[in-house]
Image 1 (spheres, rainbow, N blue to C red):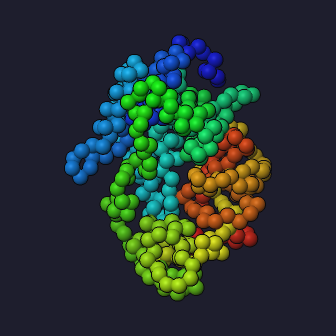
Image 2 (spheres, one colour; image 1 turned 135 degrees about the horizontal axis):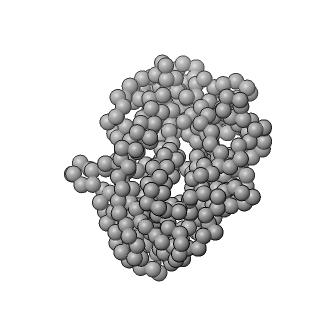
Image 3 (cartoon, rainbow, N blue to C red; image 1 turned 180 degrees about the vertical axis):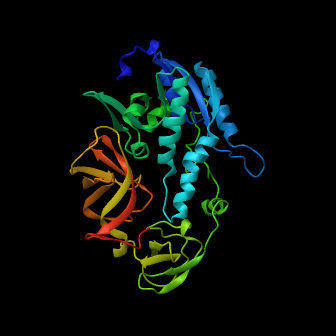
Length: 373
């Protein structure tokens, strides 16, 4: 199915508008190209602050201003229940297990390209569009998810769970552009959001302290901070507050190299630390992952590709072996630092994002690293 051959004037596109410059320019460009555009603001979280002010109100006011400027209908839809059930409960469950979740990946999979897409289709939309820096094309009967042109902004890492059905109904109008050019378009068009700062961080945490936020939902369980040899180096505030490779917040002084988190023992509530950025315990040569999702054809045999284990990382060459139980074994050409359970491993063939999975375990020389969890 390739709906992209329809004329713009016969095509309805529902744009997810966040109140930021990227989604504003997305809606503007589609309107300029002749599409029938509807703007929708998604309210995914009750973000009322301590003064009773809902911080989403300002964003929605910006959506209204931009929609009025470019002449499109707009409204808000509330996905707070869906977000809580599908994203936030997952987020808390992963931290209870001592893992480090990636709520942005889950939000794209379950909210922006599921709940929102379903809502748009009920409105009679042909496509949804967002301000993500990614691209979609259609080759040999298959939709492909491609990296955004701007390497510094490419967001395919967070979109790795999208399926053929979702890609078939998705547009990324700014994916072929650099961020600076998006700003220029916004300023030339006089959009209200042209100079608005980009939002950062997880939407439900916002500007708040992460540790304080998490403690509102999960009880902290302080415990010992030890080396892998069992030498006690101090106390930790709760395993959920730390991630592999973390340096800050350990409170370990003294001479020599800085200290880093090298592992966790959830059963014994021990945080393992080691000295030096390149501590041997942080390196592994393979990982096991589950919850696989392929953007296109599902591979049946071992193959070569590149992979990322975190958003800002350069791709590294890997060998990917799909297993009969639906998991995947990923072997690295060179040892990699801080492979973190709960995070996404995302696979690429050049510019094509092949899909991704959730990291469960790290291995070195065929042995599972029990202290990494």
